[in-house]
Figure 1 (cartoon, rainbow, N blue to C red):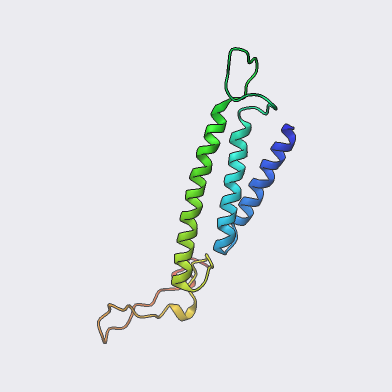
Figure 2: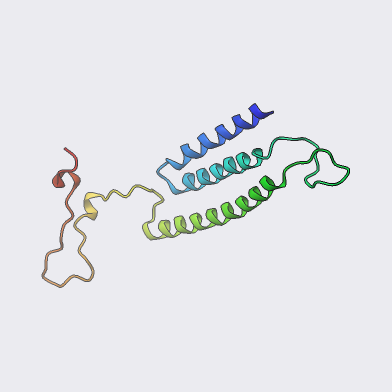
Length: 138
């Protein structure tokens, strides 16, 4: 049983990390959700895997399940739901602003010479240097 749960945690973690490293916002959000599921299963398994045990200790109960990991998982579910909702709103705002859901921040050559809307007329817009011109990439 422990091997199965440990394998599930590993698969969920690796799938979540794989999706987080994608260049689109939707797979990143799904990856964050899957990674939070992996953390929830890990937190739940820290209390020990016991079957058919009551969660509360009583006078007639000899063995019981630890309620602390269950409370931590419940809290983590609420936090991950809020985090996912915030990430979706940020991604939606970025999509509506740029008309794309790509995450890379590289500017196209056409976007480099865009003048500043608040610049004075007749003053040439400052052009961003490319990484090659700046000497970063050689």
